Length: 374
Ligand code: NAD
Image 1: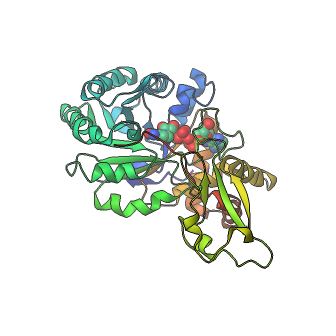
Image 2: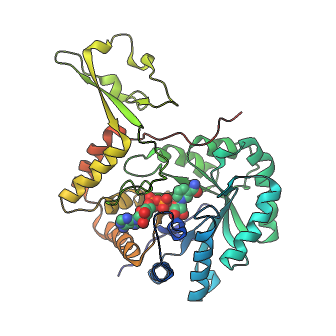
Image 3: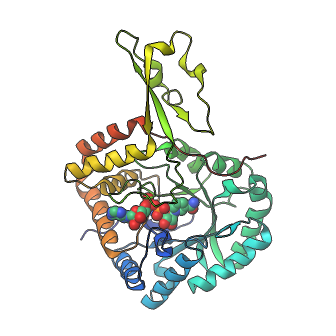
């Protein structure tokens, strides 16, 4: 079997396997996982060249860290052969980005992981805290943890892309080494691409997570807790016979959708003065059903939505690693095979275009996450 490609992570000196092991499923957040299945998945991942594992005290209320720690220690893997990231600030009972809490958090995580240090410590989902607190209190506390040797590098994670520029523009250079973005570099949403030159200019390594849109781009579908509201919809304007085509809608990224959700308002100013609403039919596309339709389309053709979705995310080499959540050796095998096939044969272009066409109406549609920042 061909070896899994490794890519550099910013200025950390780490060379991460392009497929990273997302360990949230080990916390049973996507369904039950036996210890044997977890151990087999971690063992196969390590044997096959996956060297990066990501967890958090939040996943499964600390269970993911405990299970990952047990697996790594049972397998007796030399410490220098794997790279582990965990997080702080987000817990089962809520968010706390105070210096005191994150300083205690790393000790708790290390105990569960049975490690002396983690390679990366992320502030978890910072849009749920005050970004000014992250800049002025949390990141300085994490610097002290870095100096103590309990974490080698520091990262920040979250959904809205604007949080990364907000923080990176305000912290001293070199105090944030890595960003972990999720659900923004996949077939249905690739908006992270616009931020990559900025992140490179800051010397920050880039990790992307959730290539399967947290279960939406799988045959099984998303878990109940999936944060995309089922009413998240894109509205399309279909010209009635004889009406002018909606060129504006398709040439501007911001104008090609109107989001019908309490957090957003239909903004008629996008439409332009020369267009009249009576000339168009409004068709609403649900984000969740478009993803289901994409999965069904692949199935009909005897193909697999998860495979092409992961391959799409892997294609951008500016991104060091794609974290995919895995809970069985079967999934590890499939995801490795997808990566190896991509590097030898390339992506199935025809299928990709078909899936992109199904997802086009909801392309780059995301959901609100976090608190109103002051
Ligand atoms: P994902 O998009 O990777 O999807 C995971 C789901 O897909 C799970 O149900 C898994 O069992 C399933 N799956 C995996 N491989 C499959 C295959 N070959 N065929 C069918 N189904 C398959 O979403 P995720 O797990 O949420 O994200 C990956 C990882 O990234 C997480 O485990 C976590 O470590 C990290 N992450 C971090 C953040 C954050 O920091 N805020 C957010 C999201 C994810």
